[in-house]
Each structure stands twice: as structure tokens, then as C-alpha cells.
Image (cartoon, rainbow, N blue to C red; front, side, top):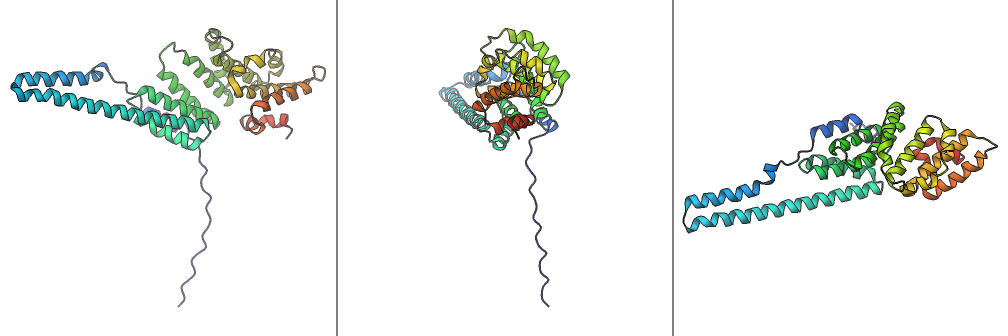
Length: 297
């Protein structure tokens, strides 16, 4: 009796990788909050050494004085191990940040995600891991999850920290991407005062200007965006190549207003050329799909 042929194998499509949901990210952060070392923990080596010296005095005799030396050597070994562990953490963080900069999203996010629990006892380093997560989520247009990361970063910072303003701007931009227009408007209004304390030629002021332009686009206030664009080229320059995204949004505004007397068609092409000189057209359209119309698709 001949064996029945094996059933044909049905090819399976692998599940596409997706970044973590806002709920999963929030749960991960909640499970591994930063645990800063208290003042007593920082003095533990000194207490150990003093305790061993007192023990040696209590025991007495020449042999007892070997105890402090043994404790001293042990503390040196312990300190060396801690330094080496910190160096390994620093190297892993630097690698994760490098991967994020190179837009290798999956390995960057995986590395930073795994570092969160390992760095719970090192809040400053854990903060840097959250920065990588926020950067990758922003690049992936996972803006709801990015807002969770920005909230965590803001919770980590003390009140009045200068970096908080930039984080709040990024959070407002993420809110605009997710059409949380009321929240974004409230945030940008509150940021106006703090941003005025920064020089115009700083990335913080440039990011705020980009956020205002993006807000005008999201609320269809194209004419207002154009009227306020006289100094946009200089205002966005501190953003480096990312200024191209602002140039592309202004091209979109001209295209949408489409006023023949104001030569909006010419202006749209001019700003689009400026944008693509900094950022490839494909990247601009991937970030803002509506720009396909400006690109001519």
C-alpha cells in the first residue's frame, strides 16, 4: 500500500513588524520606573570600610588589621566592575543612537527597549534610552506612541529644565500629526513665552516655527502661513536638512491657495526645489503624503 502524498505546504506571509502600541510602551515604562540611588546607598562603600575598621579594632591583634585591607581591595574590585558595566551600557546606548540616526528602526528600537529595565538604577542613562525610542517612533510616524515617550522624558526632567521646551514642541508636533489639534494649539500657546527666551538662531526657536507652520497646514490656514513666511528660510535654517520639511509644507500652502496674481504656482515650485535640495522627494512624501500633489504624482 503506497503512502499518501504529503499535503502541499501552504506558504505563509510573515506578519509585518510594527512598532509598539502606546499602551504597550506605557506599560513597559510603568514596569521599569527610574530608581535613583539615595544618599545612603551612595555612601555604602564608606560605611562598609568604617564598619570593617571598627570590627578590626574590636577583635584586636595584628591579624585583625588584614580585614580593612581585604575590604579595601574588595571595594576596588566592586568599583571596577561598576565602571566596566557603565562603559558597556554607554556603548550599547551609543550603538542604539547610531542605529536610530541611520534609520535602522527595528534594531535601534529593540536595543533601546531592552535597555529600559537594565538601566532602571541609572536614571540618566535610562533617559537616553527613552530618547532613542522617541526618535525612532517619530521616524516611523508612530506619533501616538511617540507622545507616550515624550511624556516620559518630560516626567524625568526637573522643572525649568531647558530641554523641556524642545520636548514639548516635539510633543505638540506629534499631536498635530494625530489631529489632536486642540491639544496642540494649547501647547503651542503655552510655549510662546518660553520660546521667546531662546535666540532666533537656535534649533528650539526653529522647531517652534516649524510647528506653527505645520499647525497652519493642519488647520487649512494656508494664506496665513504664506503671509508669515517672509523670514522662513532663515528661521528654519538651524534645523539643518530637516528644514526641507518646512520648505515642502510652504510649497503645499502655495499650491493650495493657488492665487494666480500672487504667482503661487511659481512659489510652490521654488519652495519645492528648496525642499528637495535638502530632503529627497520620496522622504518628503513619506512624511507628508499630501505632498504627492506638489511632487506631481
